[in-house]
Amino acid sequence: MKSKKILRMGLCVVMAAALLSACGGKGGATPTPKAESSAPVEETTAPQVTLEEVYGKVTDASMATVTLLTKEGNAYTIAKDDETVVHSGSGIAIDDYVEAVYTGSLADNSAVAKSITVSSETDEIKKICGTVQDAANASLSVLETDGGKTVQIVKTDDTKQTVSNNIGDYVEVTYQEVNEEGYPIALEIK
Image (cartoon, rainbow, N blue to C red):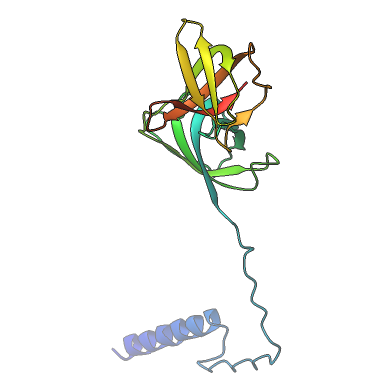
């Protein structure tokens, strides 16, 4: 019995020694706290990123970019990257209306989409082609369409005009909305 007791005692000593050596052999001594540095800690903040948004009709789309035509008649190409989130059940297609939230600038083609949401809006950009019959009024033109109809077109400060709009000129007018009288409000005349 005494030999079993000595054997147990010996095993306990060996196990205690093994535990102490695994802990660095300090035998339960508490570590000495390090002195705190009196140097100020500099906090860094991420640069401020400005998010912008643009709404328009998709005129071109690829894996890397999407091109939109706004209701003002401006075309913008926006880059997509691995972080771009597309909110759509079936991706982005030509003629979809989308809202793009982006960083960068549309003016210098540095815009990168953070998210693109396909809209359920059905307003589409429409076109009228015809010959200018009257252009005397700066805010109104009269066209005779290819189908022989006479149509009055409203021009605003936002109308993008790439032709002179003289009587006899053949023009293409894009529009999305009509005014109270039912006249198309021109987005672009070219």
